[in-house]
Amino acid sequence: MYKSLVRPLFFSMQPETAHDVMRTLSRCANLSAVSTMLRRCNVVNDPRLAVTVAGLSFPNPIGLAAGLDKNAELLGLWSGLGFGHIELGTVTAQAQPGNPKPRIFRYAGDVALINRMGFPSEGADEVAIRLAEMRGRLKTLPPIGINIGKSKVTDIDRAIDDYLYSFKTLSPLADYVTVNVSSPNTPGLRQLQERERLSALLGALQEANKDRKPLFVKVAPDLSFSAIEELIECCEVTGIAGLIATNTTISRDGLSVETDEAGGLSGGPLREKALEVVTFIGSRLKGPMALIGVGGISNYTHVLDMLAAGASAVQLYTALIYEGPAVARAILRGLTRFMDDNNCASLTEATNIWKNRL
Ligand SMILES: Cc1cc2nc3c(=O)[nH]c(=O)nc-3n(C[C@H](O)[C@H](O)[C@H](O)COP(=O)(O)O)c2cc1C
Image 1 (tube, rainbow, N blue to C red):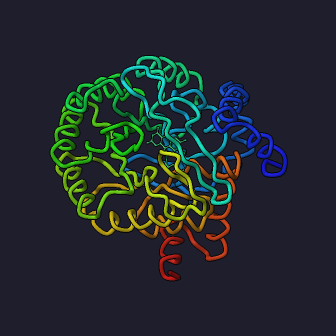
Image 2 (cartoon, rainbow, N blue to C red):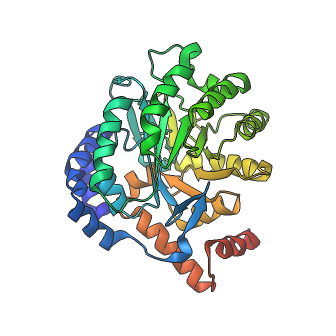
Image 3 (tube, rainbow, N blue to C red):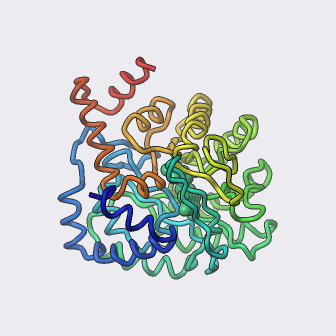
């Protein structure tokens, strides 16, 4: 029904208008009873799907990627749609409007999006108030991550204080915090992935991290492998709990049409590159650091590819736009069918069988 009825209607609107309509309609899912009813329809309850990521128990490996719920407005919906974790944000310390619209573009032939949102955010204080209220009301929520980024007005040399403000305001409400240094749409942000700046930023956040909340770093797919190697070393030294790979790409490889829209590309064309980066990171991680794979995932084989490459969970965004609200359930059903067909008692067993087939 989504593809034949709802999607054509949404796709007749500007991408962000469709998003706003969806957001307004979905607010009722924040009523505890509605979220519970949605969960009854969507949640795939199978203990074989459970994974542990950086010490956190996720009921299943499919998470909502950052960017779709920047201001923590739709927790009841994401929980009701069966996601195993929810990453909110990116939230910035100061409220900011983001880039001028239009700033999201669809490439339906490639199941892709280009966005240059530029972190529109209500700001850390507002988001903290809403999230506290929602957490009090919605009792059945999966683990929640909060992705934080630099406010646009803050100079790159003052970035640490900016991140620290968001971290101190939001981390008490989060199960984990993601440090976003990889969005292509905030000028200078990705310089924070360089060794010296990153060490200083992560060191300061860990210093402030009195509750020892797991800290993740989100990685761009456009870094060279040697730059990723340096980033991993820096994360290991500062005790980072995990990496999330990858953010959107500035490359246009895999896109079948010419476009000069600026921004980050996600969806189908990103998948191969994201998997390459996850494979590289997976092969380099020695210690306890966890890895979450993201980029172009839309079916269970893509999930198994990421798990086989070393990820312990995955996230998605673009597939939700193209496949609709049942996407997490459909992928999880695909995984449980694969496990049934191959007599697997766990996702680890399924991943090993998948690896042997590659
Ligand atoms: C419209 C849009 C907005 C996004 N905003 C954010 C963001 O605020 N913070 C972030 O870390 N990633 C953001 N992302 C990146 C996604 O979290 C994800 O890393 C990327 O889209 C690749 O996954 P996908 O191919 O499943 O979409 C955004 C992606 C899209 C399409």
